[in-house]
Length: 340
Image (cartoon, rainbow, N blue to C red; front, side, top):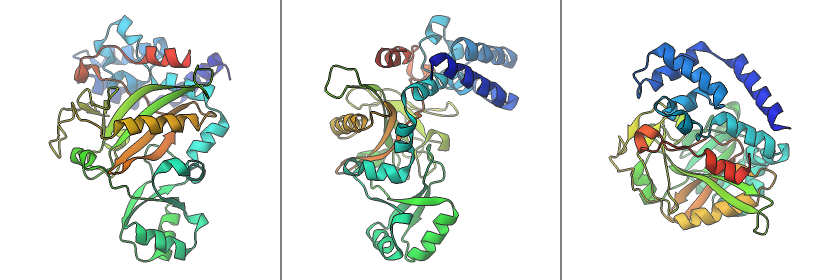
């Protein structure tokens, strides 16, 4: 599908789904860093939507109101990310990542954790799994962003458990990951993960292609069992050694130099065993040539990184100007790797 066609279809879909309340909500969020009147912000958001192919949440989260035109042009946006997905990730590649049952089978040697599909085991096998793992997560077969995931502890009746989670539309059951003590020190009530966004250039100079790391992100929970941005979690960017560069930011544009629950400093936090994170990410990207653009979610255990999932439609992560002081986005990094 050509780039122009993808963009026109995307813009048409956005126009159909435009909700004034949504527009006002993000404009009010932008007022946290700008004193501009609401009508001015709304007009600027609509202009940036057309001029820079920018979503309304992009405008609010990345403090676009504070930036010059030249600076605004450097920001990666969710509409641009969507186009990369549609242009480069094939239906086969998207299915390979989105179907959790298939994902568990095809990446079994790289996962580092145990997962089952209820359709593949009887109650005896399920009971043995639950006995090995006193805490488990039940998930729907498809879906991303942490939606539809529930935590279960000390399950003693496998048949009743099966009936409960099946009724909730869940069929995948994962062992609950015991995270590395350093990661737990950030926030112990969720598994805090690393999002590694990669693009596999199949025409690169390395055998099998060149893996470009577009962004490395530390995601931290805050009030929920998952660390997802949509569930109140926060994120910060990592440097090449896995060190957190900036304060954490949540979807409401709140900024945290320390975690509000644990008091653990976020700036300067070192992700443990980050060299192994990079190594595993490279292997995952090379395993998935049908979907060269992927956001990989990895958790850290005392024994090393384990794979949570691969997102063929990864969200965009960049430094927030008001929290980081950085006024240029990652669009040039994406352009250099992807070639758009």
